[in-house]
Amino acid sequence: SQTIHQWPATLVQPVGSPLSLECTVEGTSNPNLYWYRQAAGRGLQLLFYSVGIGQISSEVPQNLSASRPQDRQFILSSKKLLLSDSGFYLCALLKGPGSSPYFGPGTRLTVL
Amino acid sequence: KQEVTQIPAALSVPEGENLVLNCSFTDSAIYNLQWFRQDPGKGLTSLLLIQSSQREQTSGRLNASLDKSSGRSTLYIAASQPGDSATYLCAVNVSYGQNFVFGPGTRLSVLP
Image (cartoon, rainbow over all chains, first blue to last red; front, top):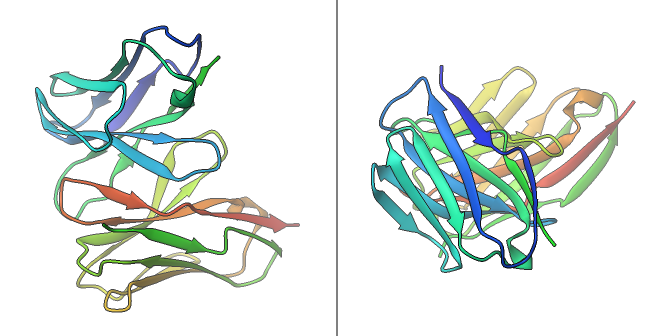
């Protein structure tokens, strides 16, 4: 069965600093991959999704970017963090039509 | 634009009660609908997946129904237990491989 690893589990960063969150997948190949953010007291917001290597679709314009350098690696980045970037970041995968998305354990980001 | 709402926002019940969580969506053209459970500070766990052609799905004490034409789904939890305490989210998949639109969730507390 598939496994999603997210690194780091928690992160505290100052405003204006760069960001790199990593999501790696095991046990499946060529999945659709997703980055979601869950802000305090709010629902999940889709940030990016990828249907393959180098293919990124952005759902919300912002100071974040995503990359998929390998089939099983999905990276979320920022050059300069904002206070509003604080939240719980979840990586998810979808294996095929009719399947359920599988979520990773998440990364808790606090921007001070 | 698809929007998903959930009622109630929070629910507190004594152990043993049967309860119903509600989910509504604005656009009936969905691929599928899913219910998830999220424990505090954790990722999401899929509970039930209902394809657009289905009316309901059952797993143990959980039963989810889907009325696509009216834009509604309900999650029925029988004989609730303290271990059921969590936030329950519903999500609709508007098109395979693309966005899952999440509701804000219902925070459930089952008191022993």
